[in-house]
Image 1: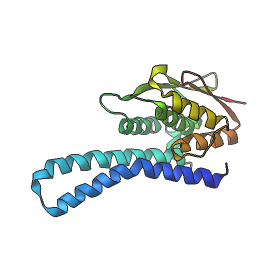
Image 2: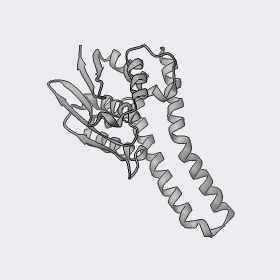
Image 3: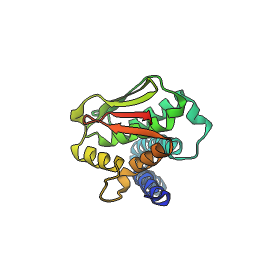
Image 4: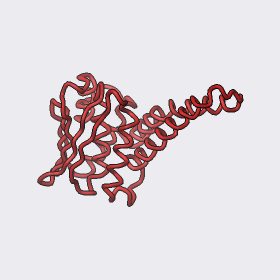
Length: 200
């Protein structure tokens, strides 16, 4: 898969993840323009939730897929960005929780991508732990029952280069695979949904 194809998939995935809330903002603005104050509180709620979701996702996408910048060297900021992103895809009944240990800033982008990919496997919430040990990066899933077997198989096939088709929903996996290859690293995905990243 060439870089242009990966770029197309990433752009498609980002648009998909943003369009719903953009539509909600647009609908709220239309209601405001109609001047019906009966829905004012609902409009405020829609604008508040949608704007926060859009801001959190855009910040995450910018750091995970954009040009390398100084922000990636600040693990405190990276961790905050990841947590805020996960809040937009979980919900109060099935949140995606994050336990962050210490890791080198050189792994910041990889942490973001690995968390995004693991979160994509979840069915109804879950818990992710991140830590570095002995120059190896671990991004672990706390409960195997929280992941979708179908998504797990698709992601495993994509990581190993055995995918049958290029789907935008797996854009982060294609991007991750390319990034890992160019970084001279190996990546493993266990049966329970744990990632291990290490130098070759």
